[in-house]
Image 1: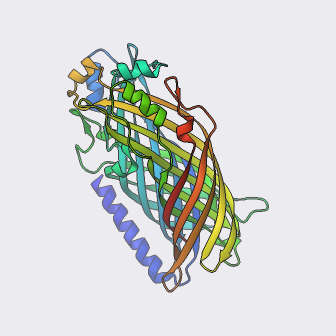
Image 2: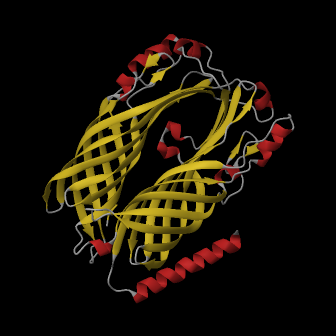
Image 3: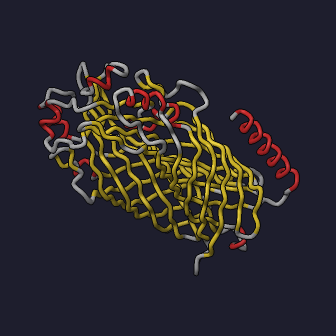
Length: 438
């Protein structure tokens, strides 16, 4: 692995140097895409623990879905990707064992080849992640009061727990690989459909950073991968002047809601309520052609705290939207527009014991934590105001400041046990964003 990394660094450095010295006219290309794939990840210590008890180890792979953004200046490539990885389930008695991870990665790369509609890119990534391993009953209770009175169903182990908020992402993760892509023209549109294939290797560079209760889960964040995807790209060849772009934005917002009915249930069970309103960190990818807008949002709402002297709890909700809209007004660097979003949301409540033993005692006792979840469809209308600041003498990109107001509409009951959380999911929100737009 160290030799492969050295070769990758040398290749990228030489490519950037040649690109800067050989090309004076700046060409731009931006894209966003969705990915799916698979990777190997053998959890050796955990598998040995299972085999010692006559059980089959977890399957040697996990499945990946993700969202990505990419901008290219000449042959220099920069982008960002979010991935969710889920391992295969194993069963033991009435319990299900599985793990999942997620990653946020910043990519840099160099385009070796761009022949007509074909591209070959070598890239490297650096970022942070989250890890969850759980052993929970296959069948959950449908009664919230019964759950709160006796939440010890199984156990959950988390490292860099984003269910308490995306700001808890951590521990260094890296990737290196190659991207092959091909553009297909879309009838009547200047955008092109980009089909991608990614091959490479992901890994955690520091040993022991993903240990959970005495067992190493480093391999859950490592392995060779294959991913395929599709998205929209804006190739320069389709534009006589640059009237289209795809930008990326970091969002920070607050949702004007509170889990009042849920808090009443918590207090009736002798637990502390969740205070305040949920805040979020999120990512927006927004493309535009003329005044037409399209793209995707993903953000993570979180509330957390101490339930009592023995337990912590968190209430978390992930939202993923596909957006379409228009810019109503464009005056110099100021724009006003609207978006309509439709997508997916979930709600997850965790009640976990503060102190748990290490393996193998943890595996033998099992009953420490409880977990409830539900999911459904969401919709939202939104209005935004943005201000773009051109950067550099050649205006390679704009630094964009954004303010949005909107309202989220749940299209399901989102029950936790037998309690509907739809009133909590339905709320106005205010968000602020900062981003880059080529």
